[in-house]
Amino acid sequence: MCDLRDAQRTRAVIRELRPDVVIHAQALSDVDRCEQEPALANAMNAETVANLAQALDATRSTLVHLSTDYVFDGAKGSPYDELDAPHPISVYGRSKLEGERMALSYAASVVIRPSTLFGPGRMNFCDHVVARVKAGRTVEAFIDQVTSPTYTEDLAEGIGQLLGVIDRASITALPSRILHLANDGSCSRYEFAQRIAELLGASRAQIRAIRMAEQGRPAPRPPFSGLTTRYVPRLIGRRLRPWDEAFQAYLASTDRLHNIAPGAGSGWTGC
Ligand SMILES: NC(=O)c1ccc[n+]([C@@H]2O[C@H](COP(=O)([O-])OP(=O)(O)OC[C@H]3O[C@@H](n4cnc5c(N)ncnc54)[C@H](OP(=O)(O)O)[C@@H]3O)[C@@H](O)[C@H]2O)c1
Image 1 (cartoon, rainbow, N blue to C red):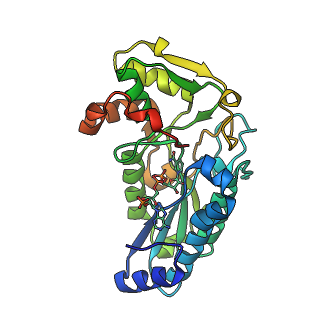
Image 2 (cartoon, rainbow, N blue to C red; image 1 turned 135 degrees about the vertical axis):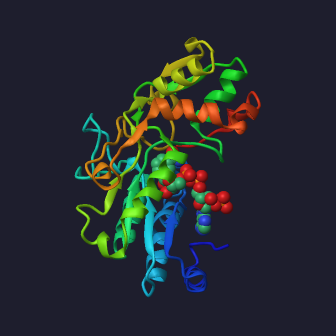
């Protein structure tokens, strides 16, 4: 166990473990909390990465650092690829972009950008929709926020495959050390929630379209942060499957999902 804000402890853990690969998924991903506590956001999303990069400096480890689609402002209006210039509009996005810079300061690193995550583990937007739909309640979902939903199992498999073809020597030869890895395609939160309701056999009418401004959340979100990739198919010979197939796989596979109690998602505050 290690608090990555503690540089000394981070160094000691890395020295002790001597990992071949570090997959860095730690962050403060509560976008609204980041907006309200910028110093904490910076400590959790940038300084931790700097600590890790420094701790790895004397090692032969490969670093895979997870970043986010929220490094983009959403003005492009079509999927962002790895060559698009980031321009974050929130504290979270800016702190994650700084985290990318820190990760890339370590020579044997790649930055992976997924988008809206769902999968087993913590409550996420998908689980929130399931819980409310099962309880017969309506779900409010943004019609003006488009992302590329990313199933964590697919993301993990994709990272595993990438690690099969990327090693320390080849990292420097990569056309880009930033890679976009999200399920293929993009949809609004409203379409996302409607599709989940449909897959659960519920009525799409349980999903109510709202605009982001109506909720008055502290942090702005990019209106369009769908992702595409120039490089991932060249490296692993494929894109991740379309988000709709990933939804079906998640809903079909998890015991946890069937065990989500109606109403369990009401406290969900994720990004
Ligand atoms: N969630 C999304 O939709 C989304 C979308 C795009 C990109 N991302 C990126 O994907 C990555 C994972 O996001 P997530 O939403 O899965 O995050 P998460 O659920 O908040 O998980 C973050 C993890 O980091 C650990 N952690 C927090 N502070 C730490 C510290 N100081 N030292 C060590 N560990 C610490 C947490 O441990 P505890 O369990 O002990 O708190 C937790 O296991 C992040 O880089 C995020 O920016 C997320």
